[in-house]
Length: 144
Image: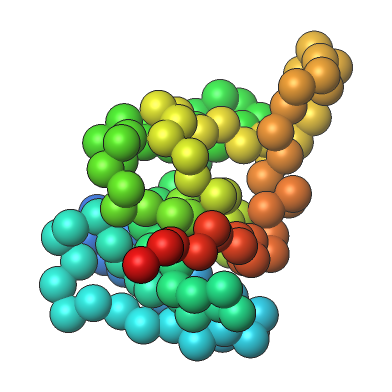
């Protein structure tokens, strides 16, 4: 049995694991005081819509079950590049029930550190904990 799964949860499909992440992200957003909306069909790169004081933000949720780099989480984002479909990547680390809300700006990959590196290198590390609050992104008003 995987340590973070409930008894009998060894057969959790990727779809169920993703759903657990999405539900945890929704829980965290509600605790932070946001109104959230979920599309009936999330096959177009938008899992949630979050209402902020500056408008609506499109959120793509990624659920991670293990650290891919020993002390950090890595998420591939190539398919979202230059689509304009994603404002925020919500990364949920299931084993620790932690969520990061990363303002997305066309990165190919996202690496967020959860622990200090084994060699003590701390320069240029992007910390997961830096993104625990949903970003209030003010966008330029459109003319017209």
